[in-house]
Amino acid sequence: MSENWVLKEDEAVELLALLITSARIQMEEPAHYAPMRLLTATERLSGLILERASEKSREFLAENMARIPDTHMRMSDPESYAAALDERCRAVAACLLRHSALREGEA
Amino acid sequence: MSEAALRNIRTRRVTREMTAEPVERAQIETILEAARWAPSGGNLRPNRFIVIEDAETRRLIRLVSPGMFQEAPVLILICIDWEVAAEHHLPPSDRALLIDVGTAAQTMMLAAHALGLASGPVTSYSKEAVKLILNLPVSYSPEMFICIGHKAETAQRGMRAWKKISWRDLTHWERFQ
Image 1 (cartoon, rainbow over the protein chains, first blue to last red):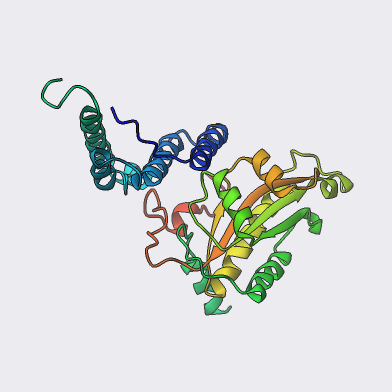
Image 2 (image 1 turned 180 degrees about the vertical axis):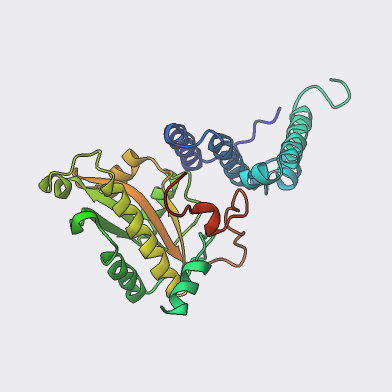
């Protein structure tokens, strides 16, 4: 477990604004916009914490979260979109393991 | 008809990445003047335009606008003034009110493109948050932002069409059989 502070208060409030306004406008938007908003929030959070993240996380963030798949890809190539998100999910799981008392291979 | 006008219509694209380069005041006024000539139901002109250049105000608006990917140097907010609508006995359900927003928006974007500027519409924002940030009069509802600026070199292509279409795919001649 790392106890680094990686987010400033203003940054956290800005992210909160994105999440709560996304939830509200989703009521008038197509359903497929919902994951796009989540991915936007993911990308923004990643960008905010990258600089102050520990070495263990920084590599993961830089390699996997700098340019995450968007809904253009979902529309034009759903298989590649799913594969790209699966790849990020595996990467985040590996990052969680690096932060955990467990180690890869012990899970 | 002017080929230049038709080319302007064909080549305009929505831009989601812009540079910080400012837009000249005269160019903004030209865009607003063009919008003044957009078609309006009954020529009643229930729209009002709010121009936002202040950096901190734009930053706050972006924070409550999940659909605003651009960091545009100029935002033009198209509002409906419901006092004007009421004066002309237009009920809230009158579709002409929103059609007017659309004609003003398209006219602004075409004018921006004719001036060599990039533009993009945004409707994904919290109306309540925008009202509060801009301290809008109670009779104004914020209907659509038009982002105006200069296209970034890194800008990706606009959203692709779901399938390739021509005007023929969109058109039917005369009566249906």
